[in-house]
Image (cartoon, rainbow, N blue to C red; front, side):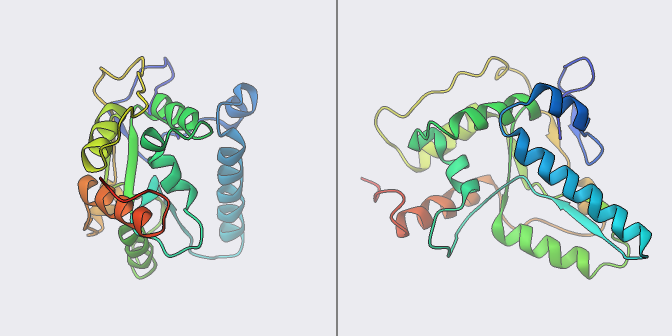
Length: 207
């Protein structure tokens, strides 16, 4: 997916149709490109199989999923989201790449992404692809909210070249038009994520 149009300018609204041609991804190989190609190829194959065999199929496009977790290791999406305060050298460049491509960082609470899957499975009108994004925010706002909730000395700073621009709206209108509503906002997502990371020992207790 991309928040940019063919001229490289940020779109005002990003929806399910805003794809990057796979040929372009193969050619440019941006950060995280292997993951992106795998996701797109899998989705295309699944829809092709469904169409050939008369199967109803819905695809949920999830942004960065965060919130509480019960796994033995910290999910990569959470490590990605918290990289501005953990200073993860492997994930910070990917965060910057996503911000550059999409114009912002999109998030959703794990409870909402799960309930959206159930909602779409039970809805006879559901068809095709659906964004499930509670909200998207600029990387500067993300860092401000993270450090407000979890203050740390010498937090790594990220200066994004286009951060002064208005982020596009990553739209979940298609999903919400079916009647779905999100339970969790950005601050609640961040609070639940940090609290779960503290409980699992990924982050030390707040001073």
